[in-house]
Amino acid sequence: MKTHNPQVDTPAIEVLSVDKTYPNGTQALLPVDLTVHSGEFVTLLGPSGCGKSTLLKMMAGLLEPSDGRLLLWRKPVTQLDSTGRRLAFVFQEATLMPWARVNANVRLPLDLAGVPRAEADARVAEALALVGLEKFGDSLPRELSGGMQMRVSIARALVVQPDVLLMDEPFGALDEITRNKLDSDLLALWARKKLTVVFVTHSIYEAVFLSSRVVVMAARPGRVVEEIQIEEPLPRGSSFRVSTGFSRYARTLQESLQRASGEAVL
Amino acid sequence: MKRDAVSNAAVSSAATAPLASRPPPSRTAHSTAHSTARRKEPSTPWLSRVEVQRIVYPSLLAAVLLALWQVAVTVFKVPAYLVPSPWMTAQTLVTDAPLLFSAAAVTLKITLLAFSAAVILGTLIAFAFVQSRLIETALFPYAVLLQVTPIVAIAPLLIIWIKNPTASLVVCATIVALFPVISNTTLGLRSVNPGLLSYFKLNRATRWQTLLRLRIPSALPYFFGGLRISSGLALIGAVVAEFVAGTGGTGTGLAYQILQSGYQLNIPRMFAALFLISALGVGLFAAMALLSSWALKGWHESEASNE
Image 1 (spheres, each protein chain N blue to C red):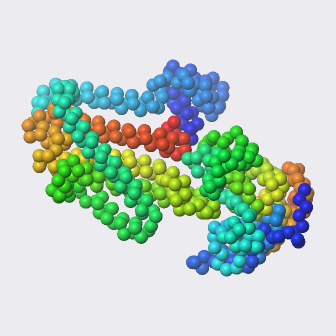
Image 2 (image 1 turned 135 degrees about the horizontal axis):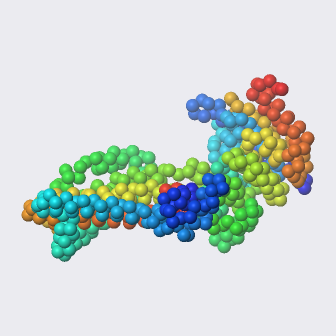
């Protein structure tokens, strides 16, 4: 499948000693160094308040770091356009426009960028097909289930043909069965579209299943504790979820999280 | 939400209408409620439909109350110059129709002009408020001032200042109707889903794109709420202004007819005029409700459950 060599690829994202302190003095994130290589699936795993969403939002340019530098293909996020690379962000909620049909919701980033209508419509159809919603273009968001709304949100991210996909606990509000299905589909999309994904979650199992690398984080103050490589080849079927390798990784992550929070490791 | 409403209607129809066949008792309550909703919806007796009930029940109540009123006036021989019977009021409405309806047309014209002015002005002010905190901070106290000053108190002044009688009445009514449009539209333009706002920011949307594609659609439910209040207030403002102006002898609206009827002790005509004012108000409210449900149907919670 993927035959990238992290050593020679241009790093997609470089986080250089970035920290975040809010004006009221709260330290959301101690200085972090992190490199995400092109084609990697990196998960930021940690409890609430560990700064994982903050870090992701800084990568997207939605938040300003208090200190340090953040580069995407060796450029600051504000100059991303000059690299010819594109970034897409998927929020925790589907954040769809309730008044607009699915087609119009997915077309939004293209409309904002001024892509001609005919080309935009073709790309929307393609993106909806990728998430399996080709028949729902004329539906309104409220007519869809939570999982389907999230798929629309992912289609809206894919329609810009991103190189990097940043996802902030996208399936956190879904039931486990739907989440597992979406995780599998996301993994297939990642492999097929050769995406670079940074994925925020607080689920150990989601992290193991999806990631090529897990960044373990801890709270109070938010910080990176450890990076763990998941050496499981693709494709990862649902049998991976019940394999001994899966449980071993889950246990490693569990212990890492417990050590970080100062609890006794069982 | 929609399905809930449907199944509730079906359950109540099964409970209230003996004609509706009950489902077999062996199934669970939940599944029967659902399957009845599916199966019985097209053949629901018309009286158990919510939209029919909404017209039939108030009408029945009105019929009963009017009958009681008629009977009471007849039995106790109340003179017409104190309380006219509903029948007599209706008769007056017919015999005085040319006078009363032309007066109603005047009042309606002033109301609609004032309402339109309030909507246009209020929306523009709301846009200005949202674009700049400075403008809002500077202007908002005056908007409140306009709202809290009783129109009766400033109407005489405005009527003296503005030569054209129609214009003076419209200005008075506009002042009364303006505030709900400003406050609701401002609130609406600010009540944007923060996630969507971040999404627009992330996609480097311009201020104009954000306004057009995000803020205005998000504001619509609030805007229509403002319209409903404002339409009623425009009518009240028009009537109040006519009362004030009427003493100066310039008005020919419904309020003037009420004043005249009062001087002449023509109480049936006064009742007929009152009825017309209420009818205008109800009509305006219904028109706004229709407009709102037409514009928001399908996507906003406030209208979605009424489908």
